[in-house]
Amino acid sequence: ITNRLHSLELLPGIGKKHMWDILEERQREPFKSFEDLRHRVKGLPDPVKMIARRILDELENKDRYRLFVGSRRIFRE
Image (cartoon, rainbow, N blue to C red):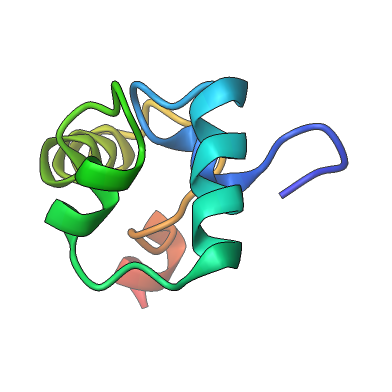
C-alpha cells in the first residue's frame, strides 16, 4: 500500500513479524488453504476471523485503506 505499510498489516492481528513469516512461507510454497496458513505460520490468529473483522471495519468506514470493500462513492452511483 505504501513504502512502510504492507496490505497484510491491515488485517487485525497481523504485525511486522507475522507479515514477514507469511511472506517467507509463501515464497517457499503457496498456501493451499487457511488451515495450511495457520499450520505454517506459528501464533497466527484465525485468518477467517481476521478477514471478517477487516471487512466489517471497512463497511463501518473505520479505516483509511480498503482491501475488500469499495468506496461509498461507488455505491451511490
